[in-house]
Length: 319
Ligand code: SAM
Ligand code: SF4
Image (cartoon, rainbow, N blue to C red; front, side, top):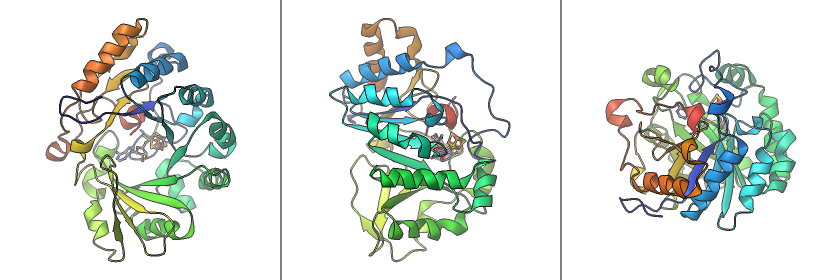
């Protein structure tokens, strides 16, 4: 469907849990988060009701995220049932891949088409520090497994952070020459824990792109959030996602369902509607989703204000 600014909204990102098996420094507080009451987190059936209603309104692309989506016991069942909705054309996931090796076969069987893997260092000790305890070998095994099953394309998402991982940007780019893997560099955003690092560690995409004269621009889809490039001999492309320096609001095609069941028409707006209240009545649910998609804000103001106005954190929204 179209929102009131004429943008076609066809993409729903679903945060299936606000819990995570890692504690990335720019995302989760060191000691984790206070566990929400069981009832305040959406259950599998509730998430599915929202996906079904959204599909009636023209949502044809779903991305499961979190927190960490692979810690949800029923994630493969949710993917399978979503894949059975006729109008859904694409099902993807964003994951830290710690549990991917174990789950990849079931995920593929269930209908998962694509996976984005968040990885901010290729070095074992540094990865452990950034994620506060993660084991990079598990991520590498997850990537190998996904490649061997033909889950394609695999995209690696890397948040660029000055003084933390900026010396590895070239190594990440080189992955696209050796493997059928795309890499997306993401600008650090001043949201949640990211606000504490932002002043010292934010790097703009432009600064990085300007250092690599051998990057060749590649045309991307209108709704793509990434500026794409490749090297002459690379197998896949390198992308830059620039929510701060080059915001993509005018082409934004997405809305978000948080782990607590609120629909957020914009990642960085404080506006959200609690869909849990409407789950028992499918007409009201449809009408609330419709109203909120239609009224999606024109743009965020994170750049001017140097902060996100979102009341929810990245681990609750899913990025
Ligand atoms: N746990 C999964 C993962 O890490 O892929 C999915 C959820 S995570 C919140 C989704 C994405 O948000 C990750 O790629 C992560 O790097 C990104 N993210 C979290 N906080 C961020 C911040 N402050 N700035 C930029 N990206 C951020
Ligand atoms: Fe967990 Fe993903 Fe946040 Fe890291 S970025 S703490 S893996 S939700």
